[in-house]
Length: 484
Image 1 (cartoon, rainbow, N blue to C red):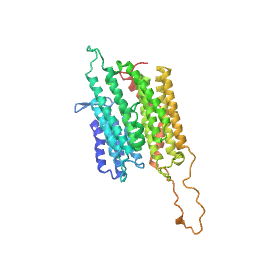
Image 2: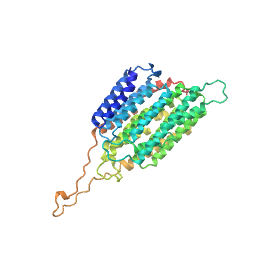
Image 3: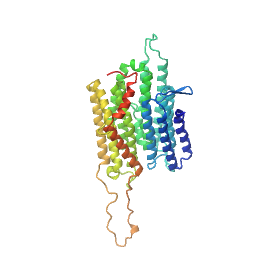
Image 4: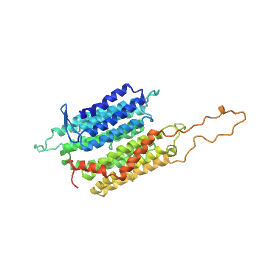
């Protein structure tokens, strides 16, 4: 019963809040209560206790429970942040349905065909969130937003088809039956393409910076902080249940590791070349995806631990970054076409949160990404000086991109909202003088969220042992992991 309730409750609440979507405050409160209830349900479900439902096997392992707690917390925080940040009219109902589908995916990881379809369904819901408009908006959806939504839709459909083909082949393949040619390389290739599309690995990366540029901040946060790590967990589980894909693909895994290094290097270099704040963050996410893919492709305990730990850090850092972006983009009295270069002084909490979130994403001390990046560096060093050098160069370029973003958008000389008033002219009355523009303080709720997320990232960076022990215990039990 808890399994069924965990899947259906957010979906039913999503349908209910859709009917009440005009009552924004009520809908947000209902969504937050739903997420807290889901967290309680996850805590009640026993670990590694399979159940059967409609012929499908549902189970919850320690790693899935850890990420499920994180995803539901992300949903609750995203809904709470939307209390003050601009969001689409249907964001809350769509977000609840997406999170319900994610719960189903993590409970059904042993059913790859069903999970492939659920991932496509969640992507379709994400498309609706991308093109959503605020309540009462008189504007039409911009062409760039529609193009981004269509690109994401097409790529996710292709990813679903390719992944489905890979799972069909791996199910009908029987090693040792006298076949002269092994389809293991083809299977790995299909899985790499499918999951590469979902994770935004090079050369399938273009949708992620476009999403960061054109979608509402909380929509980008849900997709990058929930959907992408979910795909990674599905890939790890697939390799666990089909270890032949790893055992017969030494060259293919080496190619995948090189693809991860190229993704990290290209993402960091392109981040350094951007002028848009959102696109810089989007390409930094691509860089981070490359580091995760490299760690996964090593199939060693250190590399896999670093990849999973980095994915967990990404959940926190991405949510922090997009909450801060939503705060930094608030109007401050200047025309929309004026480039603002002093955002840290105008919005100090959001500016500091953006810098801290970027440091956590890149892996700079003392934030959470530092410990996971150290594990990835260790895995790279075990493969030789070349992979380690590429990963370090990519990290240096990503750090330079963050420094440039801070210098050009956050740390500029503070500019006054209004120039000093000119002397009053003879016969001039108060109504003749221009209206003064006042800078409102940062909204309290998103500001508190940003401070809390920054503190969480700092605490994880200073004391990562509890989280690392949980992840390490799970990695030890994977059958496809190679000894050092």
